Image (cartoon, rainbow, N blue to C red):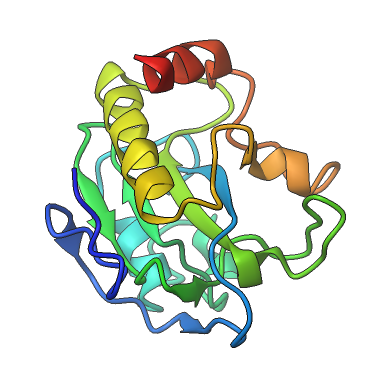
Length: 183
């Protein structure tokens, strides 16, 4: 997998452009990788509701759980679906709105200096082999394209927002992921 550093685009990824981003502050660039998990409706997979959420097109009447979140303006740089399909919503060079209130490495405003990758998943179920393989390959490409991000600067959303967030959740196999990165 290759990333075009001057544009922040992953050419092999499906491109769906989210309006929920802005330019990073002038003196900041990606320094950490944040791993998230999302499923819409909760615990269900395979639809296009995540894409709709990230593009401000989620119908609040589509599911009871959509009522509150349909008005949120959120995004991630990348989503890895259960099948392993990679969808890019925001250039890695821009600031996606994924971290919310958070703190990482003693700094606030984590969106300013991070790349956010969402995995289609939830706290109750394991992730797929395809997701681990794609995440490891994507992470390697990110570390190559953005050398400030190393394997010791990868965090879960729960790490940067403890008490507020739990993702990627107890079923995310950190040792397996780290082993894939070392291969």
